[in-house]
Amino acid sequence: MKVLVTGGAGYIGSHVVRQLAEAGHDIVVFDNLSTGYRWAVTAGELVIGDLANEAEIDQVFSSHRFDAVLHFAANIVVPESVTNPLKYYGNNTRNTLNLLKAVDKYKVPYMVFSSTAAVYGMPEQTVLTEDLPLAPINPYGASKMMSERMVTDLAAASGLNYVVLRYFNVAGANPDGLLGQATPEATHLIKVACECVTGQRGMSIFGTDYDTSDGTCVRDYIHVEDLASAHVMALDYMANGGESKVMNCGYGRGFTVSEVIDVVRRQSGVDFPVTKVGRRAGDPAALMADNALIKKTLGWQPAYDDLETIVGTALAWEAIWQKKKAA
Ligand code: UFG
Image 1 (tube, protein in one colour):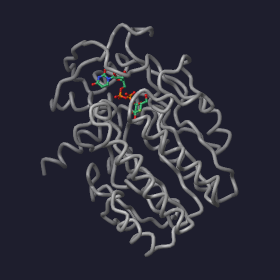
Image 2 (cartoon, rainbow, N blue to C red):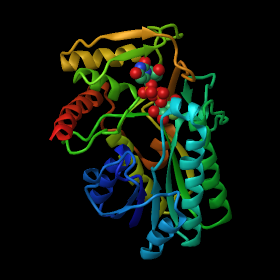
Image 3 (cartoon, rainbow, N blue to C red):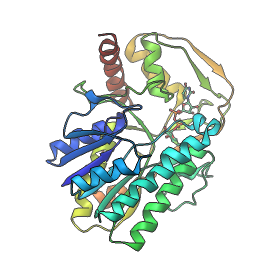
């Protein structure tokens, strides 16, 4: 297929581009390079453009005939979304609307949309199914919920088929060391812990009084390569006539913040200091994906469902990235 990948120079998008190329797809990446990098685009053509600019979007759609759009480009930092909500409603929600106008105008048949577990908010249960009511507790989750709704409403009114993937906690890196998370000022736990290993920063545990095995929050950490393979399978699924679906993407099990930090310390051999502080606003105690639907629908089977592997590839990448930055 001829595919447009927005945000294809970013962390998750770049891993997906690589797998799409291996599967034989023809790729155009559309990215403003705000948090992505040219070197991360290892296949296809890179068009530097901004989804805030409808003329730039139209230009890329009028010069290619896309079979599918995969939409990764977004801001993803929950605390930032609380202090700067309009940035999220602009870049995530309005810019998705801009993209959908082109998807509609040029009658693109397939779309894969990157959504998040943040659309669920603070549910009562810890293992989440897709049919739970959506009740985001921060502007990031709300911006993605609204975008999901636009995708599903457009599909209902047109010939568009979609797969919405709700990501849980994405981490790790391609094991061959060519790609990994290079996002500036990252806030995600495993990335932050890896930066502590190389002495770039210190870190805190946000809350030790949750109702979990050791008092710290539980999350479902999924390796970025497994997340990427779900996207490739989603395209095959739609091309084979599969109906539009919203699916969780996680492993269905969780680790506490302290467990994750212990694995990073043990694997790196660096006993970096960690400060225990109060809870971070908007953190649910435990979130895990019920992944029965994606396994059944796509036949998706994780290949890296192992915290040691996730942390090992993240640490290996961090060392490579530090050298790359210094060079
Ligand atoms: N944490 C720390 N210290 C840090 C960073 C994180 O203790 O320096 C803790 C957090 O408080 C949380 C856990 O580690 O308990 C995971 O936090 P992350 O920031 O890595 O990830 P989140 O669970 O907040 O966010 C993830 C996705 C979001 C999505 C959300 C849904 O990255 O995109 O899950 O809950 F919105």
